[in-house]
Image (cartoon, helix red, strand yellow):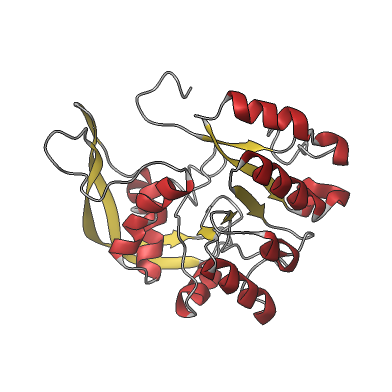
Length: 281
């Protein structure tokens, strides 16, 4: 796919040797330690350096089984050997966030950082929240990763009110959530805008910050003559829409980031948000 499209596509390599083949029905770590082959993983990374930009591990009990925190330690070892950041999916414990967060370093990423799962979110325990803020301060990125079950308005608002804001806004879009509650990236961005994030920071979370994680060059002056075009034109519309998080909690949105035109090089495409259309009914 990456070689056949005009857009730049990168990947995070899952530490499970079988990869993400059947989501949660068959765990990529189903065989415990035998599911991870460090030597083969490093060889795959070296053979695909231009494509692989991080090491992924889904650190929630339904995936890790009895491995617990050891799956994160294994991933961290692979990250150090390959000089790549970790992208840690968090959710149902174990392992606990209290165990995961101290292992992470500058450039690593926590995805689903604002989930509302019992025992696995940053809001319910002041000690855990303090660890999350410390990790963020030392350069760990907080990624939204909305998904079907991994974003809570309550947790996100708590984070915003207490100085822990997303660095990256991503959708975790797949076939089970593109018809709601996620829909698309503009809808997800608009949810954060209506929760209180500034428009400038929302845009940063989908442009410059992801490029830093992916080790992609970022230029401040993107719209200058002679440089290849790569941007989306949008309009912030006044709306009155009801949106929902992964917990089923309602949010009344008064503003919506509506894309109008996507431009890449000499090619362009008119566009609009599916979510904006769906939420209107």
